[in-house]
Amino acid sequence: MTLKPAFTLLLCLGSLPVAQAATLPDRLERPSQITTLADQALLTDMQSVGDHQVMVGAAGHILLRDSRGQLQQAKVPVDLLLTALHFVDDKLGWAVGHDGVILHTRDGGLTWNKQLDGRSINPLLLKVAQEQADHLQQAADAAPDDEKLATDLDNALFALDDAQAATTSGPSRPLLGVWFSNAQHGWAVGAYGIFLSTGDGGESWQVVNNLDNPDRLHLNAVIGLRDGALIIAGEGGRLYRSVDNGAHWDQTQQPTDASLYTLTQLRNGDVLAAGFGGTLLTSSDSGVSWLPVDLPLKVSLYGIKQLDDGGVILAGQGGVLLHSTNGKTFLPWRAPSKAALLNVSQTRAGQLLLIGAAGLQVLPSSPFKEPAL
Image (tube, rainbow, N blue to C red):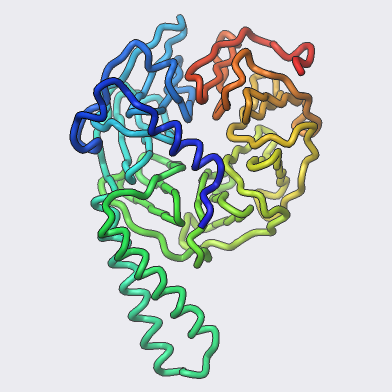
């Protein structure tokens, strides 16, 4: 399976050396190191939480930026690349990352504890894969001429082999997206089709195996919409939708084969999905159908942000930003650094915060009056 470019980017950037880290054992057990340079290293995701911003990134770095622009590094129990975060209120949040790690905070991001990692996920995957293979083997034995059952059994046996191999190789599957509907119910998605859910705030997690993804394509992002629907975006343009809190999932219309990396819902209810090679899709019916949006540049896009004034920003490769006043027509702009941008946020004072391969960049409000490309 070919790794998606954004996933490859995170793998490469996340493996850049951090001082003395290579000499320490087991990155799932050692705490992230406190450093004044954390805001200059790779940062992957960001969310406004109360009156401050929380950012995650390389080497277990989690940063809090307050309304005065002061940065504080959180206490984090792991030293590995974190890829995504989600808060349900000003206190409760979750972050996910490499080696299947899931972290939880109860104090707005100041301190974090580990809820799960790949060493616990692997046996969960193996158990589900074994049960599915056994079930389909019995069904196929009872109906040997059923071609669909035979295909499903082949896929299940392949998944079982993969789960057995993962158990041998260790906690190597990255999680790439996380979203919670409330303090109890949440979902996490990741590389090679990994999909987890919790109903108790992350105290326990279960493998979700009702997604039509036999090739175990990467699942890159998951969000919930205001009407209660859940959307997953992934490799190869795959989009999945659930309207019953994740009990069942349907693969939606797929207008592109380009991998999709990020999702958001605008205040008018429209849903945007963005990804490889300047792909941008929009849905006005809660993700049931999607239409492509033409963009002036064909750069991969990793972040979407709707501003206080209703404008929309897309962040992507080469420091490129695409800005729209209506969510439909975009003009290009470039950040001061040409490093890849992975997400955007806005402070209450109107400043734009850009994060990515070069760390944190702060722009004044309304920098888009004239295109910078």
